[in-house]
Structure formats: structure tokens, C-alpha cells
Image 1 (cartoon, helix red, strand yellow):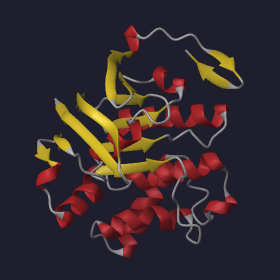
Image 2: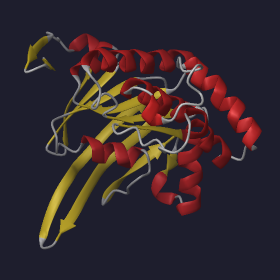
Image 3: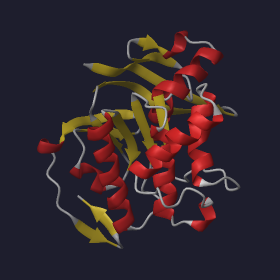
Image 4: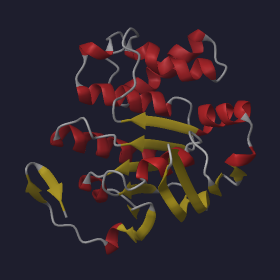
Length: 243
């Protein structure tokens, strides 16, 4: 079952007299329950496509449908409702509120979804425990490691039981070992929660659990592959994993 459908999605940014074509007609489908990695070098357009799927930006041309809903047809209030309940966001920089504890950071989306503060805390407690941070509920982001901050961000993304997790470079600020732990955790959440996981990444370790790999180059889809069709040789150049 297709849960995300992008059709001829184009995005042009106007910078003074110059037009920057970030997306040049992207057409791709993502099925429910898939783990999809959108890959490409910096500036390829993968993060722009990520923003289109999450309703954070609108195409210049073309359209995006999520669960057969055309995002372009939603007004600002409907789009906010959609993002709160249908999409869980994970960002490279974690985007946690520094003055709030792990429990408070994860509770916020539940409050926005209409739960009482008590209900929100209980739901946040359960999902933090599920990602292995039940012993860190009262810690501030500055009091835990980068990997633990990303686990808090994953819990926050999951707490409203979304259809889709959108993860933008979720391992970008983590060391290799911690990055692998986060990738494995996202894959575990896909199976346990039944969510569709879509990552915008250049981390080749993502291929180990990706059902589909969408290669973006210069704003266009270069290829759409399955894990089985991609041959990966793990090596290292200056500490980076390469194909």
C-alpha cells in the first residue's frame, strides 16, 4: 500500500536574480511500513524532498500525497494538525528544548495533540522507557550524551504514534558506533510500531536496514533500488564509510 506519493515535484528557490532548482521533477512512491533512505551528496535536494513529504515546504510544481491526502489542499491549521498527528520528525541537531527534561521534551507533542499534562507525561514515560531512557527522565539534554539526545528525539517523534517518521541526517552528529545504534533503533521502531521510516542521509550504514534506497543527484532521482540490488563494500576513507 502506497503511503507517500510524489509526482513531478519541482522546487525553485529565487535568490536575487538567480533561480536555484533544488528539485527537478521528482516522482517516487513509498509503501506503508518501508524503511526508505533518500541518499545523495550535500546540495542534491534530499533534504528539500524531505521537507516536501513532511509538509514543511510546498512544491513550485507537482504534488505530494500522504495517505491519499494532497498536502497542497490543506490550509495552515489542517497542515499543523497533519504534522502533529501523522508525522514524527527527527533532526540532525536533535532540536530539544535545553531547559526542559527528557520527559518534558517528549510530552510536548502529546499536549499539542490534546492530551492533559498528566496523560502526556505518562505516554512520554512509556516511550522513553521503550527507547532505553527510562532512567533519564529528569535529565536535561546537556546532561546526557549525543546518542541519548537522539534517543529522546526519537521518543518525541514516536509519542503521537505517527504513520511516518521523517529523520533528517539522524546520525550526522554522532560517532560511528552511536550512529549504528540509532540506525538499529529506528529499524526496531519500524518493526515494533509499524511506522514508515524515511531518512534523508549520506550515511552508508543506513543501507543495512533500508528496504528502498532513493538516490538523488542534482535535484533528480538517479535510481530507486532495493537493499538486495545494492552491493555494499564497507571501507573507510578518513573515517567515512564508503560504497
